[in-house]
Image 1 (tube, one colour):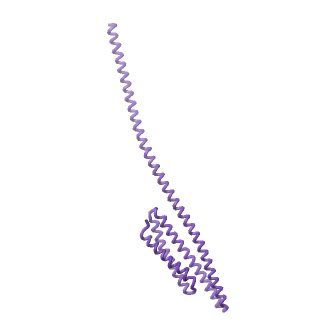
Image 2 (tube, helix red, strand yellow):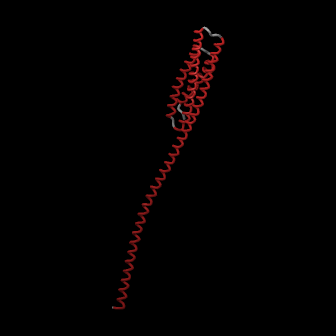
Image 3 (spheres, rainbow, N blue to C red):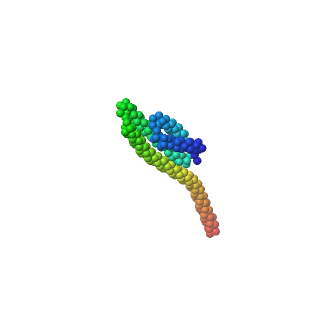
Length: 227
């Protein structure tokens, strides 16, 4: 199971992201000037804080047992994706704000700004934000696909390692059985050689007894008929 520190960091990061997303989707699109700069600075500080917590989560995940590491790393990558999306959105907003400030500066210098021009600048800002959002969405999809491929590769690697470990255990057991069989064969060969020697000795003894009996019988015949 995941560590208590990992779970606490996970909850903190989720809460922080909810706050930052509300600022980006609510207040950020409705304000301009110094107020918008302040919100951007707050969101950037929040992203830095979240990334620090995500870094600690990743350290906890890499130290976790293999059976839980994959699920924990998936949550870490999800938070990294969210942080990247927020950073891209803030970058787009800052670029739009700089473009707007530059346009307004030119407007005041030329003394030719009017209501239509301001409206055009706002439309350009909204178009820039929409473009940044589209880029952010495409980047998010790419990151998601990359994360899926990484998770699948890690899962395949874990399966291969487990299968190789099982095959190694089978080979070790087979080797042990072959060693025992070889020892048994050695003992059997020694027993057979011993039995062979005993059988040969018994044959020689039997042959000797037969020859002795023949000699005794021949002696008796000679004694009875020729003496």
